[in-house]
Amino acid sequence: MSKNGSISASVIKRLPRYYRLLGELKNQGIDRISSRELSQRMRLTASQIRQDLNCFGGFGQQGFGYHVDELRSEIGKILGVDRGFRTIVIGAGNLGRAIATHINFDTRGCRLIGIFDSNKDLTGVKVGELRVRHADELEGFCRRYRPTVAVLCIPKASTQQIADTLVSMGVRAFWNFSHYDLSISYDGIIVENVHLGDSLLTLTYGVNVMMPADGTETEEEQ
Amino acid sequence: MSKNGSISASVIKRLPRYYRLLGELKNQGIDRISSRELSQRMRLTASQIRQDLNCFGGFGQQGFGYHVDELRSEIGKILGVDRGFRTIVIGAGNLGRAIATHINFDTRGCRLIGIFDSNKDLTGVKVGELRVRHADELEGFCRRYRPTVAVLCIPKASTQQIADTLVSMGVRAFWNFSHYDLSISYDGIIVENVHLGDSLLTLTYGVNVMMPADGTETEEEQ
DNA sequence: TAGATTGTTAATCGATTAACAATC
DNA sequence: TAGATTGTTAATCGATTAACAATC
Image 1 (cartoon, rainbow over the protein chains, first blue to last red):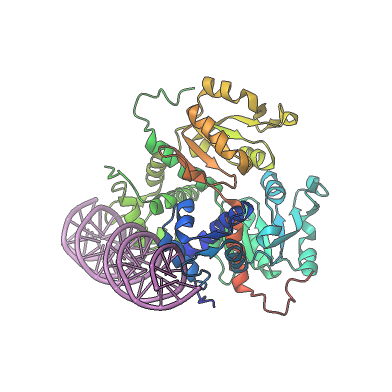
Image 2 (image 1 turned 120 degrees about the vertical axis):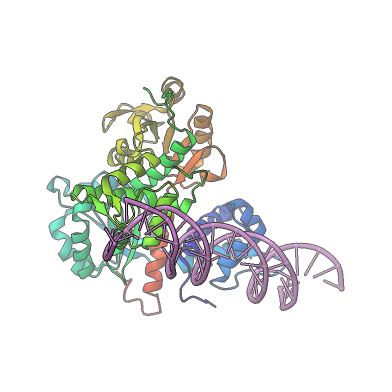
C-alpha cells in the first residue's frame, strides 16, 4: 500500500500538522471529513491534501471522504508515534530542562530515559521524572541503554564533538537546539535543527518590513 | 538599491543563516568571500546565493566576491537586527522562562521589557533581568509601554483569546510556541509559529523510516 | 591587460493546483 | 441510480540551477 521510497520533505513537514488537526477533530467527535473541509481548516488546497495522502496510499473512500480516526491512526503509523525510541537530553540548562519537561515525548514516538549535564551543580537535580546525570556517566549509560535519539541543548562550541561521541555510541538521530548546523556532518544520521534564533530573526524581518525605520523614530524610542 | 516589494519566504528563511555564517567568518578574521566558498560552507549552490543576495541589491564586486563585514551588516539591516522592538513574553512556565533567558533578543532586533503569567505563585519571580508580572497588569502595561512583539508560551486553549487582546492593544507580531496555528487568524499581523512537537515528529518520521519496526522488536524493547 | 567572479537571463526541476475519470 | 468525492493525470507555477556577458 505504501508507494514509499522517498517522500519529499515538503510533504513530510505537513504530516504532523495533519496528525494534530485530526486529533482535534477526533476530540470534537467528528468522524468523517472530506479533503475540501480539511483544506479549509488548514488553509491548503483540497488537491494538495489528496496528493499528500496518496503518497502513502489510498486512505479515503470515493463519494465519502476520510474516516477521521482511521486517517489519524494511519498517519500516526507513518510518523512512528508508537515507536518509543529511547531518547536522552544533553544539557540541563534552562532550555534543556524546559524541553525535557514541556514536550510530550511519549505521544511523539520517543521515550525520555536520561538527561545529562557537565555542570556538577546540576547533578541529581530533578527534571520531570528524571534526575540529571553528570556528563561523565554518558558513555557508560549509552553502552547500557543504547539511546537512539539525542536532544542537544548545549552551546555550539561543544556540539560537534558531543555529536561525534554519541554517533560512535549508536545514537542515530539528533534534535539539535544549538546554534550549529549539524546537518553538514553525517549521512545515515537523522538531524532536525531547531534554530530558535533564526526563527526570531525571520519574525523581526517581517516586522521591520511592515514598520520601516524611516527617520522619525517615534515607534522605537523608549 | 532594494528591488524589494515582496521577497519569497524561501529566500527570507535563508537570510538568518547567511547572517550567522558571516558573523562566524568575521570572528575568524576572514574579510573576503566568494559565492563559491560561501556555497561550500552552507551546502547551497553559488548560483542560489547570488540570486538570494540580488533580491536586495548588488552587494558584491565582480572579480572579487563579497566583503564579509559589509555583507553581514547589509543583511543585518534587512533583517532589522538593530530595531530593538519592544517585546513581551506571555507565560512564565518552563518554556517561557527558558526562552526569556536563553535567547539573545538584543542581537535579533528585539528588546525584552516584560514577562507575564496568570499564576500568582510566579509573580515577582526573577527571570533574567526581569520579574514576572501578573497577567492582570498586562493591559495597563501595554497601554503604557506599547510592546510591538509578543512571545506566546501559553497553552493552546488560551492562545487565541490572548492574541486577540494583544492585537487590540497594538501588538503587531507573535512568536508563537503554543500548539495552535495562529497564522490562520489575522492579516497585517506577523506570526512565526514554532511547533516544537511537529518538529520532533518530523525527526521521529525519519528514524522510523530508517529503522523500520518489522516484527523483531529487538531495537525498542527496554 | 588577464583572471576572477559577479549580476542576470535562460533552462531545468520540483511542487502545487486544476481537471476529470473512476468509484463508493 | 444519482451525487459526492476520491485517486490520479495533466497544466501551471515558482524555485533552483546553469550559463554567460558585464565588469572589477
